[in-house]
Image (tube, rainbow, N blue to C red; front, side, top):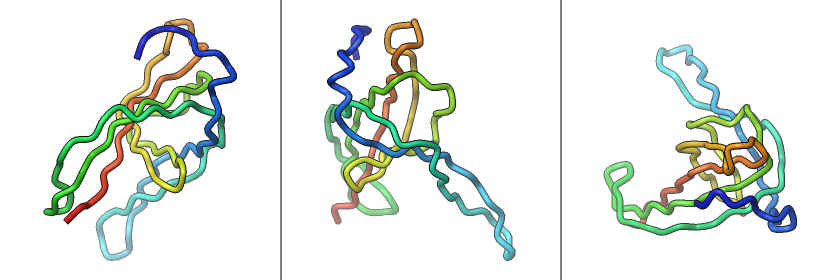
Length: 113
């Protein structure tokens, strides 16, 4: 993604930011749950799809870039809910280096067979 600052009017998608929390089970082991951090306006751009394997099955993995106003509480491992799907945050960076906008590199996987 380029370092150009997007016009504020292009942040037209409503997304929900979720923090990953790990809790311990009584039987031993851990389970990941997601707590809502915030609901914000963003621009979501799908980048491409590739074949992958998920849970020993064929899947497709789609990459996205999500741009929103800058914030410090989003990190890799968190999720972004968008249009009924979940995007896994893989990395974050300041879009222009001035901390005005945050660019999140995300992916989603869907089992195909």
